[in-house]
Length: 243
Image (cartoon, rainbow, N blue to C red; front, side):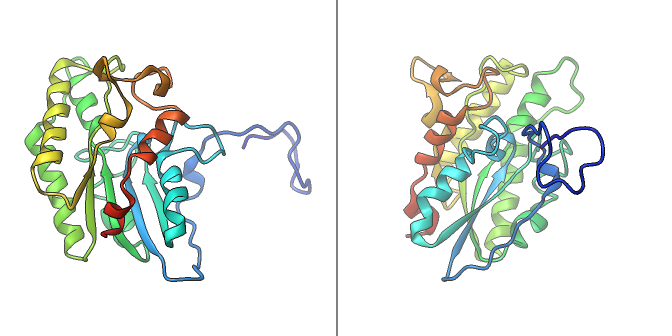
């Protein structure tokens, strides 16, 4: 929230305040449950963070999942970071580097939903003379490492397919090949404890390489509120809860 100039420390409300998305101010809020509660951690980038959802309206796909799963005494922890990557430092440490802090340290975590890699692909292929190439094999290896580390602690890992990004600023044919290859591996490789097909949930039926127009926020990469709802509704709750 942005406020007005001057000293307003004694004011109950800031004059002319406006909402801003500044997630770095708060890293964690812990709540004591009143009943046994399972926890699912959503690990990802801006698409998981909900960077293009309506400010202060709690419309990200993890928020929608939280609404659906709450009656079963499960909670959702959103550890999405805009610009985050699997393999290289982007906006904050890589998913691999922050895994202990953002997943293993979460009390009660039983399941992870992993949706990450589109920034690795986009930056690796969609920028001229990129010095940060990425291979399908490297992304698969990163996912396998996350799965292995989670399984050591009895945590299940659900793989989520990368959503379409055709028309985005860093889209490229070579990157699209890697995205499709990774999605195919997620769905058929057998490495994950389950799969959520987010790509199918928001893709344009006439052009599955792009997000459907009713779900796109303008940049051909990030969903709008309706797109995030479609993603949250695509999650099989029994799959997440291990039933």
